[in-house]
Length: 296
Ligand SMILES: CC(C)(COP(=O)(O)OP(=O)(O)OC[C@H]1O[C@@H](n2cnc3c(N)ncnc32)[C@H](O)[C@@H]1OP(=O)(O)O)[C@@H](O)C(=O)NCCC(=O)NCCSC(=O)C[C@H](O)C(=O)O
Ligand SMILES: [Mg+2]
Image 1 (cartoon, rainbow, N blue to C red):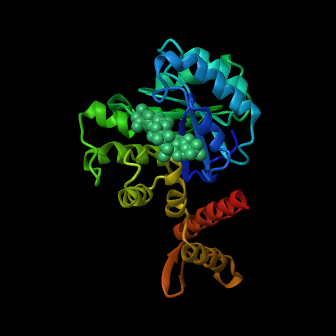
Image 2: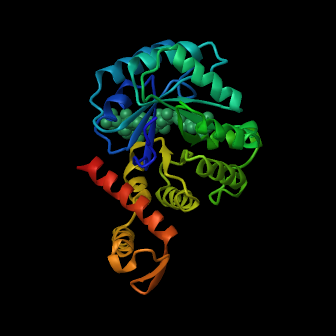
């Protein structure tokens, strides 16, 4: 699988697959990625109709450079396998499987994608949202290192985590930090993209910004969203700021100067930079360039 980790995923907007207007409106929204949901946002009676609508919307296209993800129902539900077959046939960028509990669940999802005729490059995204997933986090992550693995990204399901833990949704997210932290550590250890969970209080702009900053500072690549009003602030918060990008370019240039060849530590603008900072700088510049290209 090609390296897809430097692609911007600052803002990843969910919408119910039963909501045709939302899927239409999403063609105009500046979200980096869209999740067309067949799972929890769709009532049981509406599952088949939503599946048909999502497939039609993805086949119709018009989403530009936005990454298109279909969240299917769990493989143990009455809809899961049919969702996967229909979703694979629509050729999205990724299929998101909910409530992954173990490495075996990842293997089952990979097999289901293969049996459904998944195209080369189709990614598998997994929801991390159960206590078992947190307990099994390293073995789940290790599946990404297997040859031909499609698993590239994790999405934190903070509503389900709060439900399962009987934890409160507090603004500081203290009850959630163990789950978020372990997931980030495992994702980073196995080069998996990590996306933060949703913020339910749509009207609370200050609270949303604070929680975006917290997720960014923990290391998340971006955040999942539920409403168009959350897209622009989220893009801003998860974009590297211009000063950081300028300093990153200077750092890379400094290490490339002939007189600095072979050096492990330098001073740039009065700050110590080591080779590890040059590596961080390269990623910052790659993300900034990818954002510029996406927004061009
Ligand atoms: C939460 C909502 C039900 C609110 O809907 P509504 O009251 O219609 O909102 P607005 O009137 O403010 O909408 C204004 C316009 O924006 C469009 N809209 C709204 N939401 C979306 C969206 N998500 N994507 C695209 N467009 C959207 C409306 O159509 C209006 O458009 P216009 O006609 O031009 O005026 C609703 O926002 C919603 O359904 N949100 C997504 C809910 C969802 O998908 N939930 C599932 C994922 S969350 C989850 O399960 C995470 C995880 O599993 C976990 O465990 O945590
Ligand atoms: Mg969930």
